[in-house]
Length: 328
Image (cartoon, rainbow, N blue to C red; front, top):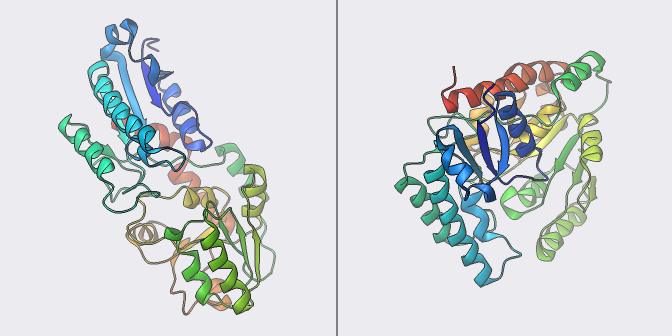
């Protein structure tokens, strides 16, 4: 192992397990993980041929809701500088592109576009999280360890009960929950675990649920990973009705399949790609969804987990990093 191999990571820490899982994969390849704030050092510059920089969500940072106008633009220019420094100090810059555009942006998102152009000028190509996007792909990590998935396979049982469906995560209009609810079968229970982002959207969703007398169990708050995992273990399907063109990949998809859930999606490029890959992903028409339709398409949890482990286990993540970094 070469102790000088260094991966400078942004962000260094994150609530999303995506960051920690990828850092661990690089550690398995002999890299030490450092903050990008240490790029501006003689040590980093002198070790350039052994450095890589991994950048996540940098093109989206200007659009955080908590930023004032001035701070947003300071952040924008600061990240342009970080990208340039990364190019100078690193042998390779890995730009992981998570979103087609920032979810909080409206209009043309000019600063997002300019950041992407800046990457192009510096000859830094995006790494996608799905095979349909970009020449090279990073496998999305799972949210459960391989050993735990293996144990879940061994303990898996399939009680004879009506199908259960879960929607989880931050609730925003682009996820199309309002459209799903507008046509949701009145005899099909739906569990929602996630905090709505605006009062007006909350009122819209509540109105649909009450007016249609839907069997919806909604906990309008952020929940812990442990509670989410329990809900996923007790659910047959995860509802993923995101609008087409709103995402490249979905953490909710990978969290759901990590616990053996089937996925039901509105039609989209992402959904079509996943249905071609895996039998547990299903595109549905909200106007014709029914309990019988779900029952006829459900793949057993044990089978879902076996497929997931084979395609997205830790070694597959490590191997995708090897491909990206051209490591034999």
